Length: 169
Ligand SMILES: [Zn+2]
Ligand SMILES: [Zn+2]
Image (tube, rainbow, N blue to C red; front, side, top):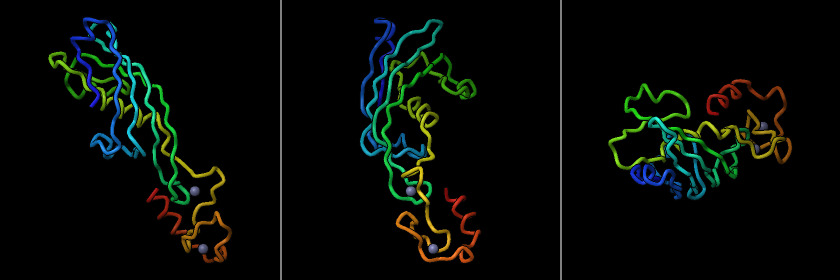
């Protein structure tokens, strides 16, 4: 949880929110992001006038992926600058804009974690390969071609496997 006391933001003008979002937090389910360890978050939350609240900061951590070609585990370092904009409201329709989130001014605490997740999902490129030169898997026998040819001939390779692989990816 990454919460900021809105009363404090109002009194002090801006508040630095720091915390760690655990890798196994329910927040990340279905986000497509898998963390190797907790993500470090540091965001300065300020009033921007007319009820708007702006959070500026960064998220750091290590994301875990499968290489899109050979399916081997790959990790990438994340150090992403984020800007989060919250405006007074409550209805889902209002929050449709990317990068802008509605908050309910009647609640005392503003939870930043979902906004952080949404922005990260947009910021991070999910097409990760272990190596730009990764030759991937043989579509016929599934052998990783990194270590050399698998022995299948070109004619053996059934293009239907390619289609299946695309679906899985
Ligand atoms: Zn690979
Ligand atoms: Zn093969």
